[in-house]
Length: 75
Image (spheres, rainbow, N blue to C red):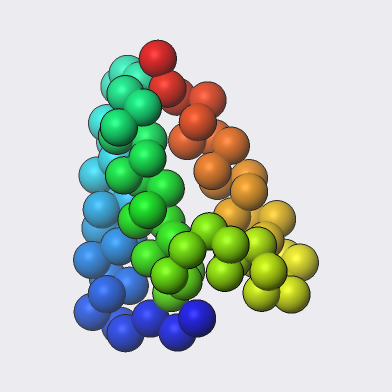
């Protein structure tokens, strides 16, 4: 689950943009799904299952926590 530095930068930038959008309102289901895909990319994974089965409890906890916060913003 290693991402290239440029990919991580793009993912981090996308996450920041979506965070700003969410600060000022709520996300549509489509936007939330896109943010979760970017989050998965940020972790260097190809799928959510890869993150959930990676064996790193801290990473799994952090992913689930961030995903939950994203889904709380869906209208």
